[in-house]
Length: 472
Image (cartoon, rainbow, N blue to C red):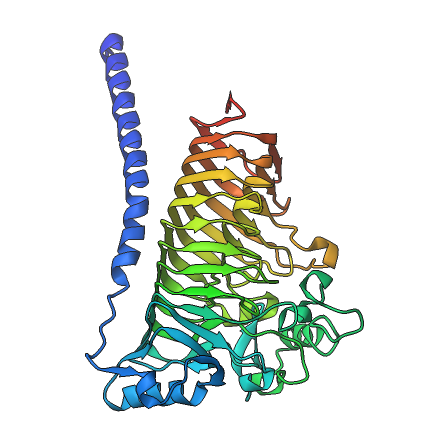
């Protein structure tokens, strides 16, 4: 059979153009659809609806002098609201001292403008101990300042302020650092009866009922902690002077955090730490913190692997990150894994902001991170890097084990960095499991002392990206 070579070559050429065109269209479709998934997550978090009932704590005898403890009045208001089918509990303008607040289903705790809720500095007010968590490990400990446990359809809204009144004489010294008021010889969280004991309980899978801390121990409580809840709204309020992690939803699904301000510079004052959570929307918030602005968690070491609930489907947008160890961080308590995180339209800028995007883990944590999409971020100044991926986190504290982490599918697009500090991109992967599939598209990085420091990673894919004026 005779072959018409010119026609065959023309056919092959046209076919190759067709295949190339299809692949390019497929790539564009993927790029377009990525944040469609984020929009779907947002739409799946329903708008909460509460009955049209209101109870003002002043009508039940609250005293706004900043000295009278209003714990019982606030509890009575919430209980009364439940009895009439739910609704809104109002804290009006004024200074209201209280112990811990327990939220219940179908109640919206609403702080009117000028409301200043001051939390007691008497640690015994946070007893009896309750089921909570400390750095990725569950335990029985002091109550969080605001707590919801196994509730549905709950909200905290308004324009007021929650002041934890933690400072260098209350809660903070327990971290053991003199910059936070610790005095040499005083009890601290790293004493053998505290964190080391809890860590050993984690390793041994000690029953929760035996993980008793609280009075006589030095493990600080979280500020706002919905635990095993569903449909949670946190909107408009301000948090300041937190003992420990500020916003810590754990094992909780369908969460919207909207227009919240965190201005708290104490030790371990992470702004927002979703842990074992699914379907989370963090939007229009300001974070000015003593630790990570947002840190997505998934349990620590053995506990995280036992619980085995990945944190997933998390959208962060229109937020302003100021001081902090990182803008958007994943880890280090990450043992159950994190997937499908979307970050867009945020601003990150402070001489006291260490990194913009950070992933931190080690071989005790293990875990995985996959599918992180970051788009349209304006970074003014950071100290260390636009992007830092570190699989040797805490190595100098002997945090080495047998659980090799997996990190893949990290996409950064449309990002401008004015001053990236020490590095543009810093990656420390593992030879046993190199970091996979990191792509930078339309990224401009200025002011990096070292443009790239990459260990044990697949080659980064650069598309229209420059560092210090050089195209990559």
